[in-house]
Image 1 (cartoon, rainbow, N blue to C red):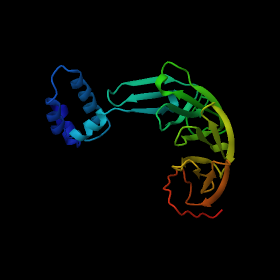
Image 2: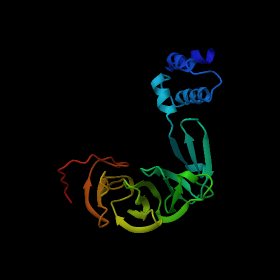
Image 3: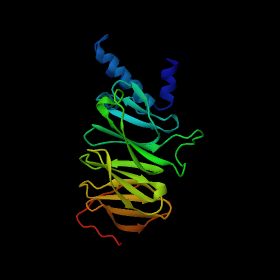
Image 4: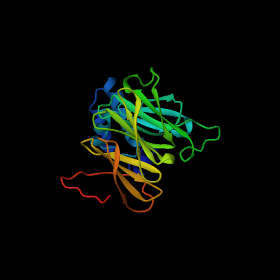
Length: 247
């Protein structure tokens, strides 16, 4: 009871969640399932409303890059179960392809005195996992550039892009064969990036020179580089019919 009162003081509303749970037959598997979802809602700082619990209980998974532990974790949102596997890098970023079948993990080989992201001069590796065999099958390893920061996949999962911050370029990786396809020059210290919905372009935030590189993924070249604010680290995009950008 004291725990519930503390939760209410912190803004967690348990009343509707309790009413929702009492409608589930006691002893059934679904009872445990919903209780786990309710607990996860509180752990994540979400409202304990019926809608929030239902949304979490619908399922799905979350993968995390555990940089200082050299592991990757898989969180099952429907049960709260966490599966953690060791990897050959200090992972900094993870992404899942749109079809959910491939997990991409990028990082550098761990050093003895690693302080995580920011170790310059570290050669990078892209790990390609089959999500269905996340725990049982080792990932494919693809060499990329120095200090890889982020990885994204195109809308249909044919290739991945990795920003190589210390090399000032982006690696294009063929996911079918897990081999490098091309390297595209960018501005200084490329970090976050996004691919357009049609898969034809990518937009890269370059931290050191305060620019955004627009990449043509058809001929794997930089179309334009435009100055923005100081130290941009991530990018987002909204494609319209008409687009104009100075080279």
